[in-house]
Image (cartoon, rainbow, N blue to C red):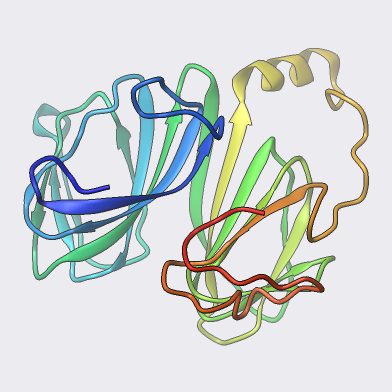
Length: 235
């Protein structure tokens, strides 16, 4: 999706609900953008945003009266309100960033980078969890699913363990928790809804796997049923 001002291109990775649009509104959205030149960011009033670079030298983000943030390199998440006016100045050449956006009235988002070693890292469940490999390779248990750079998996209401397969393994953890369900859990002290069936690669809670544009196959996202992918897609 080219920007109106010609300053970059945005690719939508996933949106909830799946048929939502920017005009109709959405619960949450994952996207990736290539920023070719300095300029303003679009406003998303009523939404929380988190941005991190995956390629490039850096961005100087000016939020006017709300302050300024210098993003000096990749993999450093910056959270800000979509209500704010924001202007981005490239500190070097073009950059590529990954963005997380959610409706703050309905959902709470958590975004952080995890460094992964040989010891597994436990990731507790949420309504929706995305795990996106950033550098190196990682594996998700109990499925033995391997992810390479910019490959991702979505899980719904399921705990998972992530472990690094290379010394430089890092992943982005994105958790979306719906506020109405959080309130009900606090009140009644139990899980909402029936106990889900065990997850599998193709169905259940491991409900989506994505590969980056230009990938000839799932590559490192190996499972019992690998699929070809020419762009970000879900299965």
